Image (cartoon, rainbow, N blue to C red; front, side, top):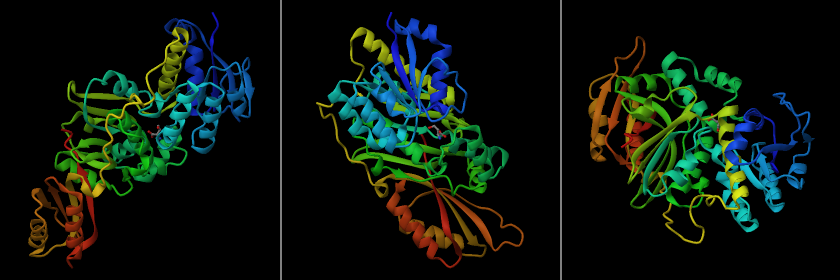
Length: 434
Ligand code: HSE
């Protein structure tokens, strides 16, 4: 039977994993698909993981793969945006289906690419772009498609989770753990994308579009990184019964959609609070099924390849049965289901963890609580840590009830004006996961 021919562009972490899984599981994949899937062309400048490509057509110019008339499906695993976008558009123009793990590409250019693909009658599959090996796109787009999604929240950057876990459990420094994550191959080539939350924001943007039927709106999402989280905050959070995680959150509110990535205190008894290391987890709260949770390897060569290969199999099956796989984002482009706006961060409501450094003398607590009270902010917990030897300042930790972001920010500014308080005040949102 004529095989489905795949071209792989880029033989780095994702490309080499895809090569290995397709090669190793070739017979089983053929049985799943109903016909063999063959790697027919590789486009790469190098082969750092030494994949055995001897019998396969090899081009240093990746565009040769897009122009190869024998290729049915092009796997884009070069990463980055500009060249990847051009490559995918060329492949579409040439009538190829595309599989990509590139979250930046989908989150920032998905609308253009999906339109081009639809016009040409091909598909772009992108399961691996969110949560690595976790089939979360399929879950949201297909498994949960009968549900109204209330919210979803996830640990969707393995590097960030690894750093926070190691800092908390082993008291290691931020930089030391980051270097290790880079050496282990799950940090982005530019690790600021991990630490500052851009990578998580790309993934959140994609999930939110599928969950709520809204356009991809990466540039409207709010992103806050983990660079300011200290071991002290992790320790204080633990003492209060919380863990600090870097979360991507999308929530349907009456006035619009919350779309934000930020560090958050999660109650320690919530399962997601105990997801450590490089693992990713996404919790989805939906009207019919309630809460479901998806956990697994969010990065790495073969976990990511697992999703890439699943997409290849899906497309190959549809080629065999002459059917069309589900819409790109799972919503019919001809029917506008909803178009709520993205809420500005100032309009969201949250509980807050505040850590203040205060000069340790009478009246300081009173001054702080007076400002909170003037702003109508209710305190859930408040504790002062004994000042350390020879230190002028003592830490005061406050947990507030839910309050609008603009209000807490005003209160923080007012408290920072007090002569007894050192600036800046640390502020971390609290996420109850209910
Ligand atoms: N840098 C990403 C992470 C890799 O750490 O999760 C997968 O997107």
